[in-house]
Length: 109
Image (cartoon, rainbow, N blue to C red; front, side, top):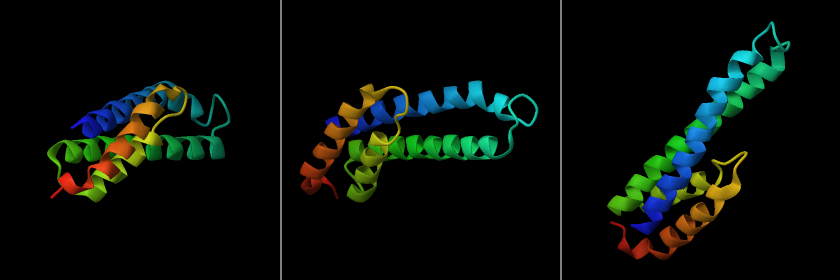
């Protein structure tokens, strides 16, 4: 249970951070204010990928709480680790979630 909660907390924090970055920054990556072009494409792709990673972390956390699909729970915990950018405070819970999911493999169906 603790691994699922930690993965959800870390994933939600990373997801909230990237959604906020998308809402604030992406309008300024357009063609007029900052030149757009490659910066806008790469930036939007990075934000989209990180939002997908945050969603996968949440899904993996839910499966860890249900104790089903160990592989997806582990993938979600690992994605929770990679869902940070500016704030590193969600890294320790993600590491703990990874360790707890690996140690609790026998509890999964």
